[in-house]
Structure formats: structure tokens, C-alpha cells
Length: 565
View 1 (cartoon, rainbow, N blue to C red):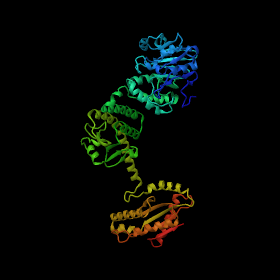
View 2 (cartoon, one colour):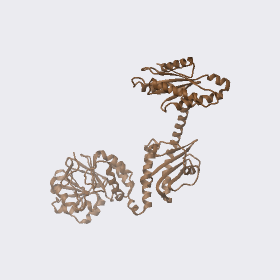
View 3 (cartoon, rainbow, N blue to C red):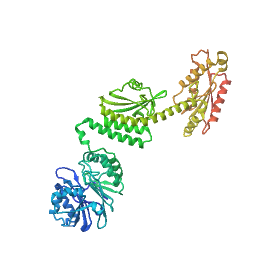
């Protein structure tokens, strides 16, 4: 097992008989990789390297097999940092029958160095070199980054000698990659040296067919098996080739970043099932490529406007839009400045309609040019598809919540109704079962002489009284206490975390507040029965005992509190 940090002053065995024999240039920290397959008198030196590092490389080769046993020189392309060491190898004792293993397109360039070496063309030998106890399989990867580029796969160890693919640009002294953070170095290399994303993706697709357990590039770090597949996936999506042109052109730099954003948004839309994930990803990309500090999405749905932002992970909530957003939703022109506000439309809406708005916030006013806006429009088109579906889902959720609220609440008083009593009480009983002694109480409340109010003043006045009593009860208890309209003029209150004294005091506080109501009725009072729960008592029995206590309060003259122990 190879570990890091490794002593790169000598050869390093990556796997049985597979050696790293690279070197570090004296004037910087960068490692330049050459590799050696130990195969007796048929040993293979892969990408011999630069003339600047040839001395260290030759010492390492001699330490493993000796130059006189190196039969094959695999040169993945004809650049000086691959073939520059060939003269030094010849002068240091390379065997006379050694051959350069390469593609004909590379041979056409290498031959001009006038070296006394024969060539073994990979395309003339079925892309395969049989060795003592293993074989090298060659895969043509043209234009990465030369016309004759190829990679070499050693089947026994599963090592892919990848030439430029997954090479990196940094001064990290580690030989091995330890995490996906290595991709930052890979990105820097390929953005500068790889001609196009399509060429790179085509090569990676071919390499995916191989059972790769390790990638050994010419520069950067050796990639272990767990990182191979995810790094290949990241590499396939990388925009490259023309990025050098963007260094002195801010508009081009933005367009390249936005193009990458577009690919990423498409990928996210395909993979993500939840809009919150899509929007969160988009916000990160807007920050990275546009410098936006925040992103908001607004949707004008039926009877409600929805806001999606990072405060609730873009899950969406009903909220009135600020004036600038409301104007854009109403059809006004897009707004530019510190808040860039752009209109969006549902894919199925009539032409010219505005259904949504996207808001990008900046730390200073921004005016985006026409070409940049064209790219943003493409991104918006993708967002509109996901947003339309999410608005439909969130609107349905809000409607369900509204109907649920109506189903469990009394229309007249706004309190919980009797339908919801059993479910809410069962939850409270389970919590109370963890207490010893019990700390749950029920108050049963009845408006005294309510029938007379209805008979003499009418049902509308009676409804006003019930609403006033309900409001008084709610104001007299804690926010966590549950208040129900039990039926007619009866109310029920559930108190948690109380003893009999606290429950009785709460009941008397309710009675006092109701008696002080300033209503059109000369006098409104209530009678209250209190029952503290017995251990593991069910809710029907508990409510029945509270009702018995209420009956006793009625018998004793009303406008009073009675407790049932």
C-alpha cells in the first residue's frame, strides 16, 4: 500500500512491479512523472520525461532494473517534456535495440531529433504490447493535447498511464491525490491545454470502459481507485480550450462561466427531484459566476404570491412582494442595479405574460450587456420549467393546509373543533405518560344561561358572545395550551405541565376574565370543571370527569370553578 507523504528522492512502487521514477525540477516544487514497468529484459519506461529531470529519472530506473533492461520507451506524445530525456538515456547506457512505442503522428515529429532509435507503432500492433507477465493496452486520445496522443493501460494492476488526462497544475508536493479537491488542479490544467470539452468527454467515455484502479498522469497527482469515477464525471463536464482568451476579456470570462453554469443547471434539473435543491444549486452558481450575493424567485400564483429564497432553503412560502418585484410581476420593464429583477413566464402561459420574477442581489449596481443577458435568458428558460412545477405543488400544499385548517378549526370562534380533539389529545396523553405524577389537566367550560341570550337577543348576538368568550379564554391561557370549542356554548381547555393548584388557578383566571367582558349583554359568566389526569387515564374518561366537575359547578350556582380529583 502506497502512503503519502512519500520520499520522492528514490523510486516508488505503486503496485507490484509498477514503479514511479519521476523527478522534481530543481527550480520549482512540481513533480514530473515517469513510470517503469519492471519486466526483466522487456522492461518498459513510460513517458521518459524532460531533459531537465533526466538525471534523477535515470538514477531511479537503474535502482530498479538498470537501463540495459529497458526494451520499450512509451512516448504518449512528441512534446519535449516527454521525449527530452531520450538523448540522455542513450548516452547513459540504454540498450541498442530499445524502441520508441508511439503513434505514427508522434513518430513524424520525434524522428526530427535524429536519434538512433527504432519506432514501434501502436496502430500497427493492434494497440497492444504483450510483456513478460502483463500487457499494455493502448487507447487513442487524439488532440489531448497533440494529434498523436494516446494513453496506456496496464491490465494486471489496473493502472492507466493517462498522459495529460487528469494531469494537474499546482505545486502540491504530494504524489497521491487524497480527495476530490484535486480537481481544482485538474481544472487549471485542462482549461489551458485541452482544445475542447467535446474532445475531452469523448476520450473519458472510452476510458470508462476500462477496469481502471489507478490513474497515473504525467503531471499532478496519482489518482487512487475511489476517486477515479467521480473525477472522470467532473472532467466530462469541464469547459476548456478557450479559457486562456478570457484572462483579459471580462465579458468572455463571464460568458464562459455562464456556459458552465448552463451545463450545471441542466445536469441538476435532470438529477434533482426537488426544486429546493435546484434553486440552491442555482444560487451557488449565480454567486460563483455572476458575483450575486443572493437569489430570490417570486411566483404569482392564484390568490397568493410565493417567495423562494435561501432563508427556508427555497421551499417556498406565501408572502406579499416588495414594490420593485410587484411592478415586474405586473408587467413593468426589468430592473437593473443592485437588485437585478427579471420577468419569467410559465412555459404554458400566453406569450408576453409574466408569471414569475428572478431577483439577483449585488453589492453594487450592475448593468449587464446584451450578450450576457442572452445567456441569463437561457438559464431562466431552464428555471421556468422547474419553477412551474414547484408553484403547482406549493399552491396545492397551501390549499391542503387551508382545508386542513378549516377542517380542524371552528368557523365561528377560530378555536380547534371537536373533530380534532381526539388526535391532539392522544399526542398530549403520550407526552404525559412520560411524567410521574401526571401533569395534564382538562377544563370543561360552559357559558351560563346561554339559551336565554339566544332566546331574548337572537342568535347573531349569541354568536358575538361565543366569539368574545373564546377570545377571553385564549388570552387567559398560555400559547402552548390547547383550546377547543366542544360544542354549542361549551369549551374545553387542555393544560400540560401543571398540578391541580395551577390548573384551578388557570380556570379561575378564565372565569374572572369572562365575567369582565364588555359586551352588549348585561352579564356573561362561565362555569368551569377541572380534572387532573390519573395515571394512564384515556381521554374519554378524563373529559368525562371534567364534565362531572362542570355539572357540579352548575348545581352549586354557576359562575364558579369545581375540581374533580
